Amino acid sequence: MFKDTKAFSGFSVDDIPRAKEFYSQILGLEVTEAHGMLNLHLSGGAMILVYPKGTQHTPATFTILNFPVENIDNTVDEMTKRGVKFEYYEGMNVNDKGIAGGDGNGPRIAWFKDPAGNILSVLEMS
Image (cartoon, rainbow, N blue to C red; front, side):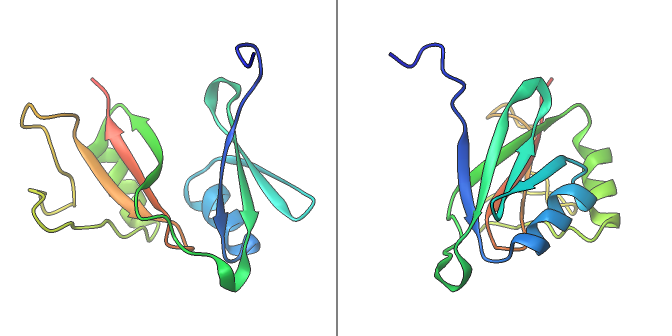
């Protein structure tokens, strides 16, 4: 039934202008705006809808978007220069940059939050 549809995902934020600045200026994504919502245009033609919920927004407590990168160390360094703060989760073995993994139990990964508190990640795909 949905095999040939171009499905997309979405998530909420509390401040559309602040989200637009973060996703376009900090993360470098192509971002368009229509009807008070954002469209994040990803490589390969994928799109993510970002919609406003204002004061009713509750940040996701799980990773909503993963960005695969070739070199996580370089990416984390550049993001840190742009003001992104990386998350440290209790029980996770992370290095001083906030990068976990690389121990054979999955990819090297680092989590961060968007301005609305939603959890995102960069992960090294090798």
